[in-house]
Image (cartoon, rainbow, N blue to C red; front, top):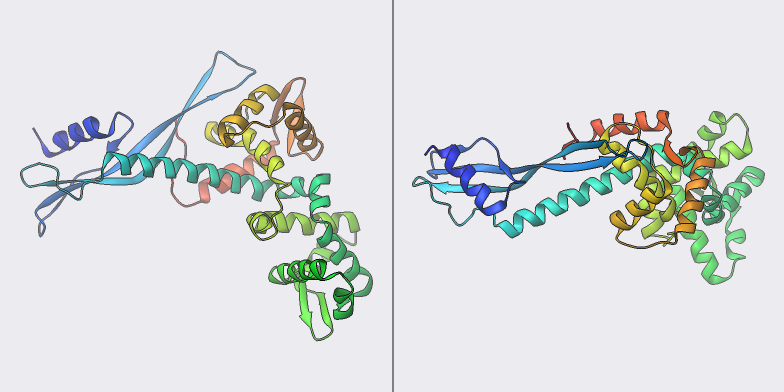
Length: 309
């Protein structure tokens, strides 16, 4: 039996049919054979408009571990265990889910910024922007006027916006930053569009910080429901037509939690109103321009493996 056959046999017996190996390499100095563990992980995607059609794609997952054989073609101690290989595979699948969500947030930030919920949860940002538009400076006295707890929160927001170059620290307090001025020019003095552009930039570049630093989680259900449509669509690499029931099932499966179907249906309509999704009769489907951008961004991201037919 050849080295390749023996390593493949070992991989099949110890890791299962979903795991394969790369080309074995021989280390002359260590006198060992090694082969990378990898997987073309199957993903079955459905389109509710064509219920009998099954779309099968594969996620190409690499660097799941390594098989190492001695010269006698027996595994040696440094061979990756089955438990570690499964752990790595699970981690890569989680990485794909996070990457897909990040792509969706980056591309859909303009639409998410138009949702009423986003404007409510970022009201303090709106307060800061409004004051800078009218007075150009937020003074130390303005900030100190708040009760202590609110004052600390306002300072955190100002520093957060300073990190984005939307505001700038000066001796008297804070004034507008370079990005603030650039977005004013881009939106040509249209105040609602200017606010939306700022919120979009914050969501696109600092969504995780909003959750972790400011404990703002109200946007999460909107991002999650949007992801429940676009993640399978990214895997299928084609626009899908899904009912609200399918998206609700995806939500339970992807996020391992149950949310009121009424709430999810409301969020879906908000996403449609913001042009993040479209609807025809009972089917929700993707915004073609956004989906095209998502596919481009997915192909540019570092290897994890893109779904392939």
